[in-house]
Image (spheres, rainbow, N blue to C red):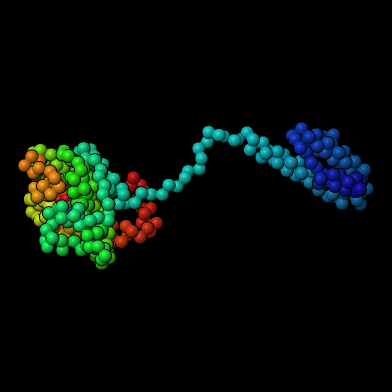
Length: 339
Ligand code: DAH
């Protein structure tokens, strides 16, 4: 009996089946009522009493191993079958992580979007510019003190080549080729020779807008400014214009909005005034129109320019300008939901 059990055990351990039918045949051969193991079980009562214990243990062991083996073979077929029939070609692929848009890009797109709805189209110009487009064509006289308002990066070998200090340079680029009506918005990077700190950087971003047509008035400008402020910062936003000076606009103004962090009540961000400055603007100086080949007796226009970092700070309260260029993933990920 023990020899028979050993033999069956050897057989069971090396069982192989290449399909479900073969497996079923094996199950019947070994484990069914009329199978080899049951036959042995039936013979068990004839085993001598002193051997019953050992034979019984071996028999049980054989039965368990046979069942385990058959189950293992069954699982193997099942998993193979699964691959075949669970192949769902319509299932979507694993999601691809696309990353996030940079906060400055999010805000830039928002600004562009608001102006696009007013009929402005995008114009771009080079970051490496010449003195003419950055200064001279915008009415900065050669020794004009306003040139000192902006610390400019010059190329030593050729002081005529500069990194643009403002996107107003695109105004002159467009005016020299396009005929009015001109209605453009110019987003881009600008450079100034500033020490880098939490509130200043040697490069930052601006958006410039320019509208030139017949009979453009300060009222048109004010209306666009109000609409922009409300769209960008919410319908309750108020604006206030303060007289200012820029060489390329006359009259010129700076626009404040009611502080959207404290709602105008006063907080550290608005230095407890309730107002924060967000842009410069004005009516295009007739000199600028003439310098760029546009008849100032026929046409007038307005221009405005703002820093994208400033607007982003107001919207998202980024306290340190350097965060915008350090590519810290923890910072960038905070804007995942913002677009
Ligand atoms: N270019 C100015 C600056 O960088 C901003 C500016 C002010 C742009 C007034 C304008 C404007 O178009 O009308 O500080």
